[in-house]
Length: 463
Image 1 (cartoon, rainbow, N blue to C red):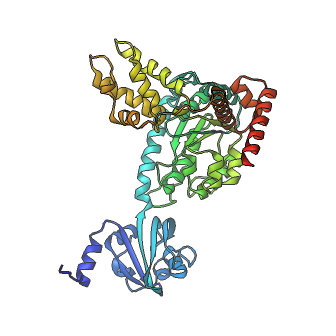
Image 2 (tube, rainbow, N blue to C red):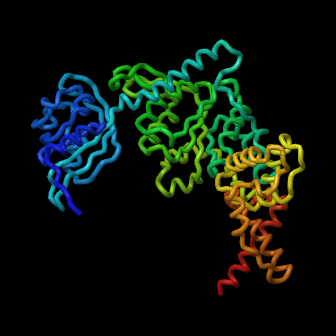
Image 3 (cartoon, rainbow, N blue to C red):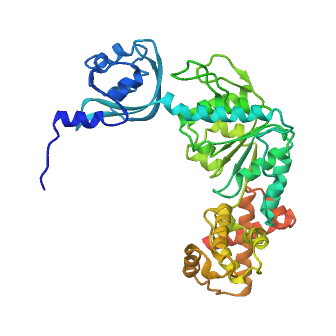
């Protein structure tokens, strides 16, 4: 196989054709490559930067604030770091940088940086904020805010005892001003519960604003939450953030555990002070917002794996709500099927179809179930529902299901089943024996007796 060495001209042509700002310096911080996109971002000419030391061209940067100089010092890459600086013309710039060292084995040759213009990235958040502000302003002429919720707690369809208890807690928590953390797997209905809490709260006539913290880059999320001041970076204007828009109502932060830790620290300060400071601003703005957060893992797990700050955990996790996955509440599969299917078909629900739905593990939970029902209705048209119309994932699940061997006496099987139910109740109640007893609808003393017997059995087995 024939190979070709890249000439310097070919390499330069390739780099100049990349639609990203690229800036490379040697080990002394002297610029050795600076493409046209970088020049456009920085408002400079390529000739003004090439061959000059980084701090000479960008005097507002220092050894500590320059990502390129940091990498030269540490020899370690930096990914997606925000950098704010002025060019020689006094223009304030902000970029998001990925910077890596250039090494020949262990010898440092220099560093190269790929930057995105924060001002251009922020256009998306500005458009979002503008749209929300316009909707809110238009809603001032209406009786209710356009940010009113679509769901009530009664829209969470369930016959599961654990979920019924969860809804009772949600209604109780709604009457307070305390922050709430809702956790459960994706698709379990966390936003339905959050909207339901808002609907039952004294803030029900105020706005309900939801933001997915994992759907937007962290550099944009900060300005979306807290707003911006004119001149804080190129193209910035005075804009309200979601905290200001949600004043008097509820701010729902979904996928809270994906929020960067440094932004969590700023959120904690807002919660403690009851005020926000816009990006680039110097003054604080008072806000009155009730915070509901949601996670797809337990707060304790997020705390242990380092995606949730301990101080914010203790501030937010006052009223925890857990929504169990659909596979743990098979009774709700039938309830949801009857609610979503029966009003739209002229035939009774096929028992085999129901059985296959209840046998599937539903990793996407209620959201996946509803989408599967819509798929089934689309395929069924005028004919009765049958198993042949079901998607392949349900068919395969049925084929792969192991046959349970019912070995042992009836007493042993009943005891194993009872222990499994008790363990589930303790898990859903967070280890609280009294709450677990309520879920099982037995006296606390009875549950304590059964737990003592289980511990004794475990000790004997361990010997």
